[in-house]
Structure formats: C-alpha cells, structure tokens
Image 1 (cartoon, protein in one colour):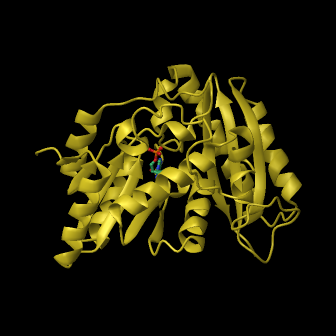
Image 2 (cartoon, rainbow, N blue to C red):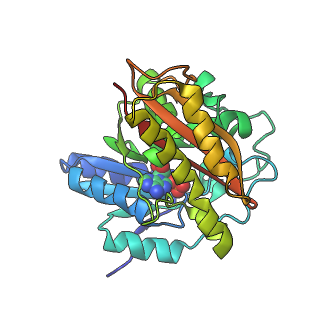
Length: 293
Ligand code: AMP
C-alpha cells in the first residue's frame, strides 16, 4: 500500500480542496497531531464512508502546548502515519512545518503580535483551567485548518470532549459552514481510551491507567442504578482513583453535556462525567455519557 500523498503548504491544500469540490466531491477533514492509533483511524474511516475526498492533517501545534508541557517530546513519525493513512484510504496528508502555519521569523508565538481565536468561557473551565491558553491554541489552529482545507465536514473524537464542544461552538458562532461530526471513543480491551500519550506509560503505569475508565464506569453504573446526586457520582470516581497509588486525579466531575457546567443533580438534560488524572508523570483525560432518566 502506498503512503498517502503529502501536502505541505496551506495554499496548496486549499487549491487541492477546491479542485475536489469542483469535481463534485464532499471534502472531509480529520485534524490530528499524528502518532496515529486506532482512535484516529476510526475518524478517518468514518470520513471515508461519508465524503468523496478525505484529508488528514498531522500537525503538532505549538500554540496549544503550555510551558513545561510535552511539545518537544510529543511522538512524531510521519512515515508511519502516512503508511497507515494510505491503508485507510486517505486522499492527502496535510503535514505543514510550524513555519508553514505560523510564518518564519515570528517564532515567538506568545509575543502578543498574532491574532488568536478566543474559545470563551467554555475554554476556561476543566482542561482550560489546568492548561491555560490550551483551547485558544486549539481553536486557532482548527480555524486555520478550516480556512485552509475548506472542508464540508470535520471529524473529532469524543475522547477530547471539551475540545469537541468548543469546536462545535466555534464552527457555529464564527459561521464556518463546516459540519462538525462527533465520533465515539475507541478503547483498548480493558477500557483505557487510546491516546498518543499512552506511549509515555511504563508497564506498571499502563496497568494503573485503566482506573480512569473504571472511575467513569462507576459513575455510569450508579447513574444507571438511579443515583441522581452528582456529588455521589463524583465521590465514587475519586474513590476508584484513590485505590490506585499511581493515579492522581485533577478533577472528576459531573457536568451538563452542552455547557460543561457542574451539575448538582442528574435529570432533564444530558450529562457527562469528565476525568483528568496524572498516571505517574503522564496526564490523561477521559469522559463518558451519563444515562439520564
Ligand atoms: P490528537 O492527535 O490527540 O489531537 O487527536 C486527533 C483527533 O483524534 C481528535 O479529534 C481526538 O479527539 C481524536 N481521538 C484521539 N483519541 C481518540 C480515541 N481513543 N477515540 C476516538 N477519537 C480519538
């Protein structure tokens, strides 16, 4: 199987996408940071089913990483990614260099000289609180990808639930005219959500990491059993994590599935359980839909 063809520049991508649309194809975009796994590939396959042409972006976006985070050591293997994407039937891989996206020379991206997309309050809670500026970087790069690829549809994983909600809101409120398609989280057989960052885990940490999923399951099971008190669900999640010495939760919260505001009680509107935890030195996140009466 031949690797997917490579596109380096935003201008080239736009020309390609416009040609595809002139030929009558719907264009699907799957934004990623590479180090691809089955979670990413499930998005690509969904796009493949629904769109005549599929472009996958592979870009480790510096503006969404905070100081002291893993931008430099984030896993990168474009050759492998392109082979996997070739097998998945992706039509083009957009893998720009940082300068292709943000321009050369102006390397200090935090100088205050650039235009950014502000994700609003939704970008300040939960992940936004633990990672200041993260969603500003995400919203900005996704807006740039939308402008460069001009896709009809864009595919995002529920794995990064807050990100998905922010992108849906951005697409709506900034009138991008892109249909944002949510895709279910792909998990290992023991329940751990696939993530490029799982590669950082030692064998022992990998075994412990399943506590995130067990915590979410505990909340889901309680809700299924009729428990409506959100605090009790949160406490149950924390208890599961406490049983695992290698896991240090940052938050375990029951929230409104749209506004992400913390709930006191389940009922009436869809709710979501969110969890973030350090497993050793690696920070992982996960989430699950809560059944509601
Ligand atoms: P990333 O490369 O981590 O930025 O992820 C790129 C896209 O893949 C995002 O929309 C993620 O939500 C999605 N994704 C990552 N992991 C998974 C997973 N385990 N299942 C489904 N989608 C995922």
